[in-house]
Amino acid sequence: MATQPEDIAAPPLDRETLLQQARERAQLADFGDLWFLEPMDQLIAASNREGRLTADGHAAQTESIVKGLTSRLRMVEDIRRHPEILDEQVEVAGIILGLPRTGSTIFQRLLASAPGMTGIRWYEAQNFAPFPGEERGHPVERRAYAQAMIDGWLQVAPELASIHPLDPDAPDEEILILGQMFVSTMVEAMNFVPDFAGWLNDYDQSKGHADLKTILQYLQWQDPARRGRKWILKSPSNLPYAEMAAAAFPDALLIMTHRDPVQTVPSYVSMQAALYKLSATVSDHEVGAFWFPRLVDWMQRFEAARARIGEQRFVDIDYRQVAREPLAQAERVLSRMGIAVDAGMETVLNEFLAGNKREQRPTHDYAPERFGLDEEAIKRAFAAYRARYIG
Image (cartoon, rainbow, N blue to C red; front, side, top):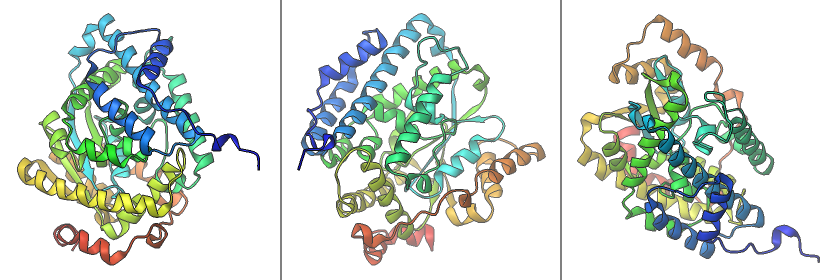
């Protein structure tokens, strides 16, 4: 049988090649602080060793890394030309964390739709620096890039449409930006690199969050209409690394979304199986065997961190209550952040809810047996969590 192009082994990823591709794309050379090279090297080594990248996956991983490096080059240059970027006053009012698949996406978007609120848009997370010649406040080409990404993903893994609502302009996770600095769980979510995931657990990610704060200033400078608005961040990556986020944004309310792991674990594993399908050859059972204990570890890390952070920083949101009374739950959080909800804001929130119902997307099927998961094992592993938050 003739060898198909996708069966040809991809060349190994190489640090200097990737850096040079970014320099050529940006026509710039100054990356600023080079702290990111250490995690970048760790990812490259793990990806070459265990990533099982297809030819398409190699191209996608290369593009993901190069675009992040290119955005960094462009941001460093913009700050050199416009030092006032660093004078932007950014207020992160809330950070949503919790196990994946706990309704955090819709809840973030609901809060971000409130007057006086904002969030990182998906197209910004893909390219946080403007493209050359982009008119300030009119990122037409970045939106088109993001939409092309979404179209490509859905062609390869159409089930993603039922798992995560993909929209270039919708608020999404800062994990997508941190991942371009090689310090977030986005890396292991898009690339099957268990060794890197283990390494990241003990790595000091604080410089990534310091850069994230600068990037928020940069995004606000790009869109002056955001000045005076409060930012709402969100990522499951904040669960295992909660203290990092809490320290980076000390005034932010920590919003923990809750749903029974009996549903969330297989749902997230199915999402990971769909994402890995974009770039690698990993069986469903291998995905389950990696992510089930990984999620258990995330929760154990979080439980210890929450005790150190202090209960006063947290508000807990039950997935079931959001489904029953989303507006009331949004009002709970907004009031904790010092934002009064009047009739006008209720109208805006209700309009958002009317256009973002779960039934407007395909049904998501995530039978645990497909991934070698066992319901009783999930209950045992999350017994303390379920007793405290699920009941």
